[in-house]
Image 1: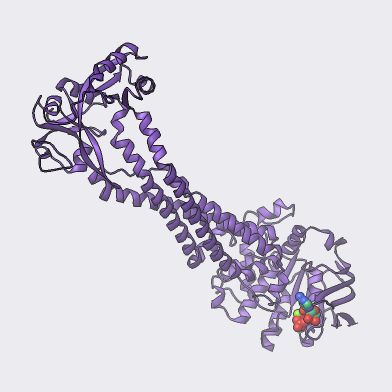
Image 2: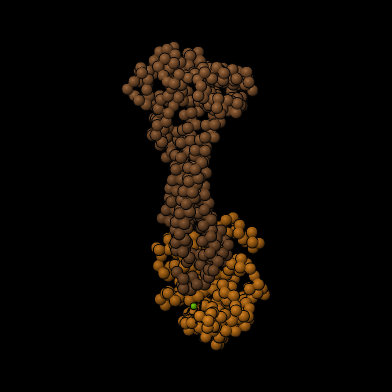
Length: 232
Length: 380
Ligand SMILES: Nc1ncnc2c1ncn2[C@@H]1O[C@H](COP(=O)(O)OP(=O)(O)OP(=O)(O)O)[C@@H](O)[C@H]1O
Ligand SMILES: [Mg+2]
């Protein structure tokens, strides 16, 4: 579904070129759980940003269902992220002035917006995804905390809210960049399991430096110094 | 459930940020509106106090007091419009108060019949008390003049001990005319006998008051100059406008500076608030909210704040001016117009400038903004 072809991402570090990704080629298949493993600074995050269109490769290309991401407009890429991709970041970023439930809803377009941009939407009016969001949060054990503000939630609870935000509406791909890095092992495993169990038919791309988190992965690629080292 | 990203949601849940912004705009609008309204009240006072001249043409001879009959003849034979009355009058003066200090005000001496005509000409009125009797040391004041001077029926209006409102005898108020125009009338016989200068003046009315202005313009051209001096409303307007031209230029500069200062301050404040929201913008952009959308959202928030602040400011300014008018101005018949459109128009640049400044800072901020930097926590 997402094809990375000979993609490189070069940063300019005070005149010196830093290859965050070096000539990477990789394909993500429908419904697949892909693990990306590697030490710190190896380019894992960079690869993730390339795949989801947050970064544009310096050379090579990334295509989503045959369409090159760099040929899309910024708005189209944004729409794609909002509609088809879900994100879980290392830090559980939530908007401080919105409740858990509202934070989850932020991750999806309104029905009106979906219509305007020509995306077919199964939802009825407005934020009709609300029941789905409630259900999702309840499934993640936050049923009694729907209306809590972020400062009233623990780190693990916040991360679960982020997961609900990434999953709501049924995404084609969920990207997770070290979603467990800030959690203890038990919570970390729980988060991964939640992601795996709730992603439905979507793919999951998870970046981590902890191999034990990738036991359920369909495939794990290891990356070091921006190069693909192995595919297990 | 409402859209959590609706502009109102952010504004209502971040009142500690929203209220100071609105507060500054409200104060700015009140300040500017207040200054302009007070300034405007001066020419407004002139127009109101001397507004009686709208109803007639005044003519006084220059140099030679024997000219009056000749002037009367010219007016009667050459007037371009049918005339109402050509009245002979004597004029003395008194002092009225204004917010910029004392002003001289005409006490007009007329025959009793002319007095009635004069009051009718100014729109008519009911009188508490009565008209001054011929030759008596008596006066009739219209209600605003009485209020301005603090005079009631029976009070001494002019007197031998008051150098600003002098008359060799005590002239008492015997009538108060309930009307808007400012009027002070005394019997012509009394003024002829006791007051200088011994010059007869003419009060000329057009038969149709709508033609008064035409008569005034004609008289200004025909009689003005060496022969006579004319008193007309259109000249009052021109002279008032002239007098305040420089003042208004200064006012414009001051208000422009004020707008610049307030805008800079607000832009700085909003810039700080926006930089506190970088994480929010970065996150939303990463989640799939295009820059344009985020900008539109911030701009609608700003527009709401700015428009809300302006409307609140106008309402507050109006309330404040009404209070000032009722408590401070009305008791002395000073002019202040809480409905002064110009005052509110002058404050319009405030919200517009602030909105433009905000747009500019927001555009700059979003132009080079990398959400990856935010979610990677390199930028918080
Ligand atoms: N904005 C940037 N400017 C310059 N160099 C950068 C920039 N972002 C990343 N890099 C460099 O690119 C390389 C890969 O970074 P990346 O963030 O992809 O690593 P990572 O594998 O995700 O590491 P970690 O596990 O610590 O998150 C690193 O050497 C990093 O220093
Ligand atoms: Mg990383």
